[in-house]
Length: 449
Image (cartoon, rainbow, N blue to C red):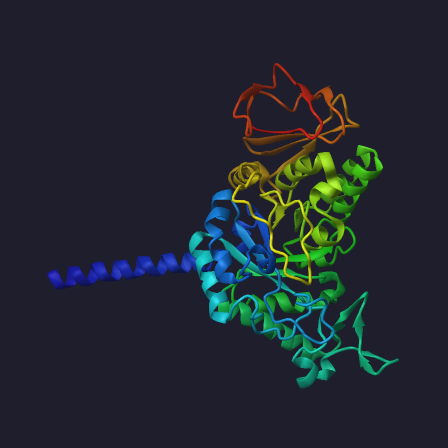
């Protein structure tokens, strides 16, 4: 009898462990993408060592800051032929199924993914499907995988970038090889998804073919570098896309004094897309930082209000390495240029407040049809962007001064009723009694009911 009882206890324990493991392994992106945020990791510039192992030491800090998903720029080896600078572009791949030795080896990468998962992060990697570098292994083993330039009878140079060459998506075998390469990373390293570089430069039917095939290994999160306003068909394949139009328009708004109504009109256009997919909102990333300047160069006084917007509007917030410093310099792209960490993360508490609110308050769920977003009318509609997001009893109010001056104004309408808590100031406010504000240039306020 004792033996039977002992065996029963063992079996229950095994079943319990097995169930727990299965739950962790099969957690669907649809269950976490609504509340996640994405932090782009530039391994080359993140630490003096520029390795996976060195970056691992930073992950507990990022977890404490509220980061949920880590996106690594390309981890594959860099082509040496016609490379840019002394180190080359990470977006000019030499081999789709190997590790850039600059960052470590395959075991180091697997260790990184395992450690990230242990800490509760999701991991996605950059996938560059449109092109490769000039000496990619396929140029020797399968030259027929590439487009040819009829003028030179050589590989076709990608538009505007002479260190990369374009793949031929009319070749069915190349497509299958690309899909198999994507499967490799999921199967061998257990990543959770892909950030697809220049996704709209690749035929949409490839992504329609690739995603279900790759997801035979496990369900994944796909974010594509395209704007759904311009590429609506791609939005049917990807979980999230870029908001390039918004990013450019907000920079123009600040630098060229555009009317705020143009931004509000653009937000209405994005909202009209619906919740079948999400938009990623950001003030910086690797391209913007290097080529167009830091968020403070581009947005000046409204850099922080736009960061608040990115974390609270309908979609998924995207941060770049060093924004928590803040990083005030442009990072080199083809050379070693490590972020100048000081040990003081002056913006970390700012981002933690926003990211924690995003993950915990159901009114901020991205791409959820149960959430309604209202643009609010104010007595200073040409200067103030105010909106309310609601999901059942949960409400989040955001008020942003988008002007280059102090503004005194009132919120209008009867949507706001009752007491809300200011998430930054930790004070309560009854909007049934008082809807007036005095905001300095660059000010922002976020309240939850």
